[in-house]
Length: 176
Image (cartoon, rainbow, N blue to C red):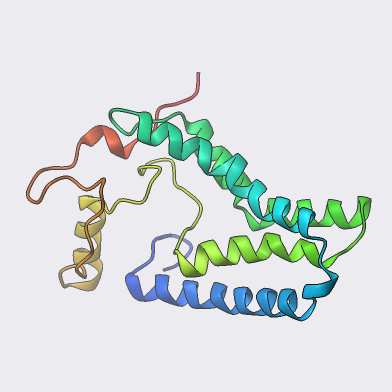
């Protein structure tokens, strides 16, 4: 909303997703136009490393955790690999050490796809690792918009209707 209140209303979130969709469309268009010039093994590796390092370990830990609490290190891994800054560094180093190539488009395609198609952003430490709408966010939306939050589809990690969400799932553990 602004630099002092860094949260999004549903409309603002949709606008952010639309901006990333434009980037996804551009990167995907270039990828398709240069299809026959792409080295496929590097392209696949560059697309997958982001989740192999940053998402899958945290998702496994989250789903194995009885209360949803996982070490902060998993959030740091996710945020580090899913950052446009670190991705830009990977692309720049690759282009400098190996040379520029069309396979590098796999990196922005992955990140722009995550943000536009799935709505994934960097993960704040104070929320569950896997997306789950918190009652506190619903209250915030009511406060900001003056109306009830929009209906949402239930997820496997949501508590049964009317049941309070376990407090422990809203905070990760610290890494000692």
